[in-house]
Length: 404
Picture 1 (cartoon, one colour):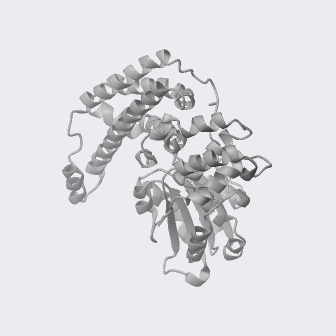
Picture 2 (cartoon, rainbow, N blue to C red):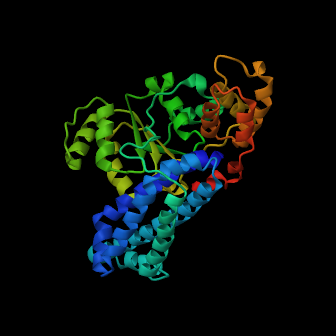
Picture 3 (cartoon, rainbow, N blue to C red):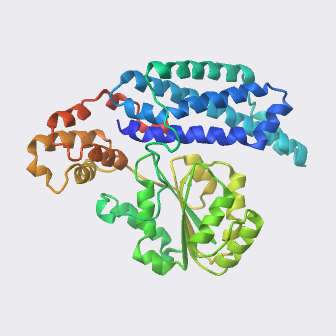
């Protein structure tokens, strides 16, 4: 259950990453250059769009329908295989570009040694397409509905705002990160990049919000900016957001060079704190491009990065990664109870308290799961409803780490 509540976001994000890759010039040029059948990628995109259209409905129905739950599991496997294949195409396209432009032969030999495409690309695409076609054919049988226009349960991107009264069990973690920001514990780096890493739903964004809004941080830094990067890593958009956050008008310019020169000027001699929330992108050269104007800031400026991916952290960090742990059972219960019991105390509902504690325990320390389930049972005093959630087969889904 804990995994189901956060896994859908990852699957949706993976689909978005695939759509972005398939639209990229590098992938299209590579496919055409290899004289592969263009229709295969078009068919893959069509299949993925068909399943993506019913994904929200499937995520809602899987709670009560084991057949839909099985459908999502199969879809997840197929989508992640497609993502892996496109990742390999992307790497091979990069190798080809280096062959053409790089004078260092060792780089080319290194990429060649990776032995990409152990199986023929077209046969792998055909196999993935076959699995997706089968899943598309099942959606009518499972009565999965498409949501037109805006997704019915589309997540808004997190902002820097946080209700501290609704956060439990993160005092020690907050103090540990604040110590890294404290001028008294300055490092030798011009700028520290501090990754906060943890599985989905564990509270990385919430911890970053607590730190960003701390009064001491206001005193330590001249400028602050919060950027929710999410699955779409775009240096232009991130740069424009930072400029907007530090009250610098950048109009509607689409010239990255112009924007970076402006940002470099605004940061000159200023100590800044940037939060890059929910980063997925793992391409080192893009990170290098984004951070180039940051070096004009004052020494001991800081960047906090939240991500579920250790690879992202290793690419961006220059100080040790901070790995966020799950909540204690007690803190998880307190968070669940805050959202499940409205204007009352759990002790006033002894028939629900024991079931609620058991549900909170099965959330496995994930605050997002505790909050979501507490909200689901909010204003529902029927013990049978609570018991149904507690004994749902959905708890038997794989651990959240499988989505990360």
